[in-house]
Picture 1 (cartoon, helix red, strand yellow):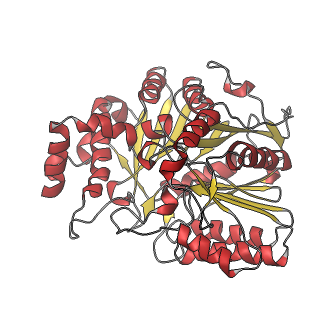
Picture 2: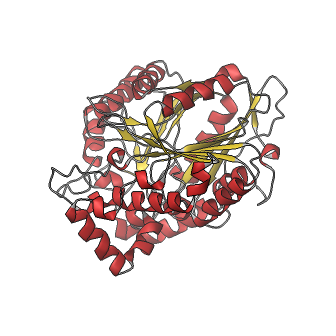
Length: 446
């Protein structure tokens, strides 16, 4: 257990040689490494993602996994995706069986089938999804916020920019596998989506409630190790809901204990109140704060004004309204460079980075968007990297440079568009949402 005010540097960790930690800088490198690891797997392949899409990249990865199983039937392979997301199409698309139809197709095509488990974090998708990250292949953890589809893996022309890391550690891999097997797959609420006799959500409502309650008590189990001066430490964290959420608590403590600098990445600018409060306090005590956010046009929900407007296309503008308000309140801090806001935009690609660096010694790899939804609803995890002797500083500085090369520094809140600048359908939508005070509710679930 992690006490609320436990110093981050004192958290139990797994010791690791810096040579066993690698930063990847692009989605294409990530895809290539994923395929290479799958092809050379000898013991196990555990894939956990929000979704594994029925598109070219999704089929490529699933084919690689199935071919590995046919070559070595004894290979322990488990795939987990979100229960709800797997059984619907993309937002705005018509009725469909979703990606689960592909899972059934593959299972029927091959001699040695592979279970693809649907993990229902809540009875309805809007109130919580499986947002765990990390693929475990033998003793390697490939960690990214990316799911599996064409844009996340840069299979076609467009990519969705994320963070990508490779960690070689048997204790870490074992800890994450144990959680997947014992705290997720073993529960009666979790079912194989590749089978024809899978239940309806309404039939497992009680199981889902019990599952969520049990997840609230779960954690990554490992034997703590003391890292010496030649090593780094890795602490796996998991959290769901507002209470006893060790991941949330650690994020708060990282910000609260920062002495020199904080560097935060989030694709959707909507800090929980507790995070906003700690960021404000950090700035007051002289900590330099950098925040990297995707431009609204780099949001995966953005719809170009020359395309037919759909309600979901209003989301990027709501996030930008939050950002403009935050920047306006912090105009003096922006002017003094105590606070730097960087907007990421690269052609028509999109932005999905999450995570944090504190004082060049503590780095958080996570899929957590650092927003109210992640804070209260979704099942999230993260890896806290403790680098007290700064063995990884060159790798992380290179990663930061890679992130910032397509950003614009905001020098005043006036650089950010206001409501009157938006397309008319967006203006009407935002005014309607504000008029009925739905924006308060939306901020908690988006």
